[in-house]
Length: 81
Image (cartoon, rainbow, N blue to C red):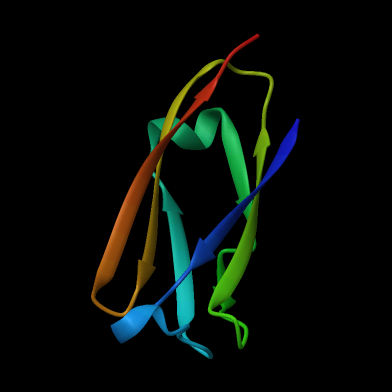
């Protein structure tokens, strides 16, 4: 299965941050159960960048970290049968 993850960057007063590169990393164990594309994306005028997570046929957990400048946010993705 594939799922889209939307990352939205906002600044002061919730104003969108455009043209900012967002990179993504999967922890070593997580690479066995998911893939993500693209590896980096630039936010649109609305401050949004979209990534696609695809599950492999291996169950498990993956820690995914998104980074933009000095900001970092991690999520855990669980792959079940």
